[in-house]
Length: 147
Image (cartoon, rainbow, N blue to C red):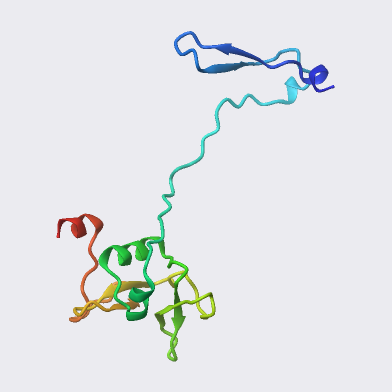
């Protein structure tokens, strides 16, 4: 029944590349006036998705993330499954551990916040653009590899 309405699809080999086939349009199809001629569909690649970095439980417990992990979290705005952001008593987000999803909180970094290390190497959740004498500036990945 389908062949009688749609006709038989025909494929032609390209002469320069024998492994590529081109679909030939069927003119004797009864649905041809209603079909559009879309040859190629491409997905937009404007948005680059990052990968959430892996962070060990010990690093999360002691809040000692390295520069690559901080850069990855700030770039993707997400934490792995073993860590969460939780509000403290004053409503500010803090980094905490997550065991079997018992900890309340979110894996998504709140808007307007970023992770930074202090001069002793401990990680803090601070507002974007915060500068202080004890906070280090975040490094880019090429600066991390050169250091």
